[in-house]
Image 1 (cartoon, rainbow, N blue to C red):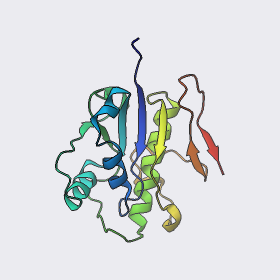
Image 2: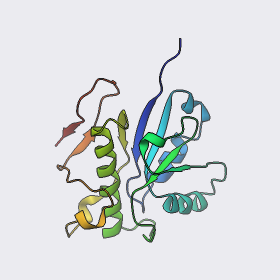
Image 3: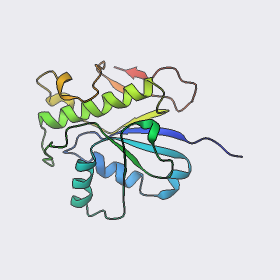
Image 4: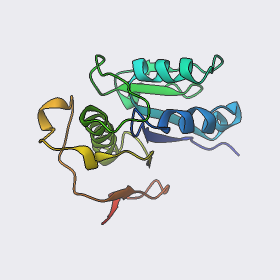
Length: 163
């Protein structure tokens, strides 16, 4: 029986934290690509920084501009933050909070447009945000505060937001 693979959006979380390590280790088993098409919402530059810091050499990403262009047999990444962002491992920074927010925002937008079927969020610390971040997001959409979750069912109409 043949089935259509679902597209799973994954927001990168706090760029100064363990988000990319969790993503890399979770997707390191190639068998996962038999069941879904992962799309990371983040930064290929930040991902490369973390791969080097973690000494992970056998993990590659397919850069795409839109979730509709995702390649089914690869881990895909959509760059949704400024490439000039500075990674400061272990530190809480305004820019890390902004990048986390922007990644989730773009992923939720794609979920609402049905470009992805489900969204997995990796922890991000938006508590450090002290200024409005709308202007710093490439495709930012205002989101309510809370944890975003969603059903894996293809017929789901909207993501669930839990406060």
